[in-house]
Length: 479
Image 1: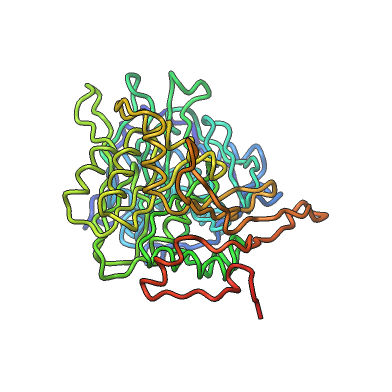
Image 2 (image 1 turned 30 degrees about the horizontal axis):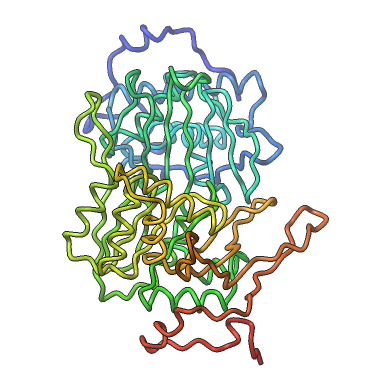
């Protein structure tokens, strides 16, 4: 790469006449204008080589040129296709990009020009420097810890990348680009927000003054295609016998809670379980940030709304759960119970809305019961603890615990039946339990999911629905 001229100030650049409008002759040769939009493979930030194929000195100037061209494009053409990366939007930008590149007097090799074009598209139509991570199917989470430090999770392991933002303003621009289409914002009065990307990936944004390192963006990516139980079996997250059991429980309209820690895969499992609901049933989903990707057609999706800066306009999960009961649902699927909506969910399960599904944060089935008691008390209803436990025992049929193991893998670690009450305790019985055996030489967890041999008490309900499971599912009489 030959170093380009950056002698002009930003003010001088801004004062220059705009590029030719559509319909006028572009400042570029005809052969170049007719060339197709360059497409290149995005290098992995986990490779030992730098992200850009230039030296440290020219790499700094490469970043300056990228930002100069991207800022000029944004100033001249404004938001393109609502920041959606389409072939039409890229074609609209290509002549202007080449004109600005010629104006900069940079001398680039063909591959370097393609790298620059890709980077500029990321800035104008994508999410800036982190766009390559979002395109990488091996990356499951992206964590921006301020403008100078970006981590990513790949195959269950966290590592630091060589990606940086130009400054805090640059990182804020990406944050705003994520939030704006959803009508959400961050500011001094309320510096945090939850959001989602167009593909459903979950996003959390927190900015100064609460984020001391600068704008902090956490993205939990979704798979580009909807996962199935066959995928979870292939990943080693579950077994074929357990899949048969869980499918039967959903078809028989049992109320199921998926519990687990942060990042354990609760929402993914809930999404897969929801896929077992018959297409003939009306499903109402309630989520804080819409993530579920149900394949059925008769689905009504409800999403909570945060408060406006003045504190008004908030629509909480609890409000949506109550409203869902008035929508004639066959099934209610709550993305996650976090607070007082747990009481409304339990009441729904106890008043004719069988087959409901939800998730909550807990590491074991017993912890899940305790969490539900605590969250029910957060509803403001002064109910005795025993009464709350009776509600839980009557409402919940099954607790499925999803865990993230030491090696980063995500597995179902227990499937537990809620059998009722004895004295002041909720009676639980494990049906399947994951047995960990040790570690391999490369740190992979060795273990297997084992049936306990106990036949659930609700098997009569399954049989009444015409669902029969072989004894081998429960570890008895396997042939």
